[in-house]
Image (cartoon, rainbow, N blue to C red):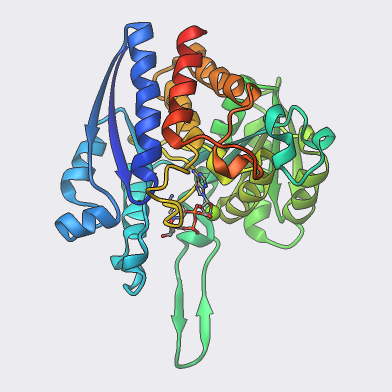
Length: 355
Ligand code: NAI
Ligand code: MG
């Protein structure tokens, strides 16, 4: 198996966690006799400093010429005074749009060893394994018109979806559910929003092609409560852009730390993989960053871009094993002893090699 991976480490802890993730990918390649080719590119604050642009053309070309893009995180306080279009984060939005992925996958998995790190009771989080499929290119984030008229004190954003936009993301959710526990929970606000009525009707229509998958609809407000009360009831959760942004962050509580959460954006020209967390300037350079979110993101590359499901599972199992053995980075140590980013990466590597 040959795979070209563009590595855009970015700012802050981005390079620190990305290094551990690529080490794991290198180990998988070596163990399985695969050929993974890594090409590095600049994005975010470091790209502005070195080239003047948060997403240089060279980076975009590298990304588009790859089979998968692994991103660290972008964002640096020294650019805080700039307008949004000039800041490091602009690079992130530009690359997401250029790659065209419309389905953002965010797993929320409960690790038994971390049950004490979550404010939810262990009996509630036990065995939780939710996969959010969030529509990423439509809805309020991109709908036009959008403006803020400072003179009149009026502003507008538009929640807009077409049937085909809903259909394509729904298909991804059902395809994934059919390889998991065969349940899709579609989230909307169909009692109030026309867009949600289109959403619900379209998802119901798509469901007819997947007789083995159960479909349920939930209103977003009560869903926010169900996720906290009965998270085990959910398998694949399908949402529009804004609802998914909010609910998947909420579900992050189940895992116990932002540093544990991976994500993948699929469906476009090239899939984009990134841990959910940002550049964490408060801990950058201290060795405190948790690399597991990035390492689990690497597992998603194996699953969704390389079709190496067994290897993806092996990486996830290695993470479970290291956590079960009691090793913790500071964010999940609850004040107890902790190890560094690199030490955690090495332990996962060892566990993988021994598996
Ligand atoms: P953040 O996710 O960087 O950090 C939030 C808190 O979580 C901080 O206390 C941080 O230390 C901690 N944290 C995050 N990742 C961690 C990890 N792997 N291990 C241990 N602790 C971790 O979010 P924040 O502080 O709101 O934003 C910082 C910068 O990152 C900003 O410039 C923001 O725009 C950017 N950002 C970038 C994202 C991306 O590149 N996808 C996503 C979110 C924020
Ligand atoms: Mg968010």
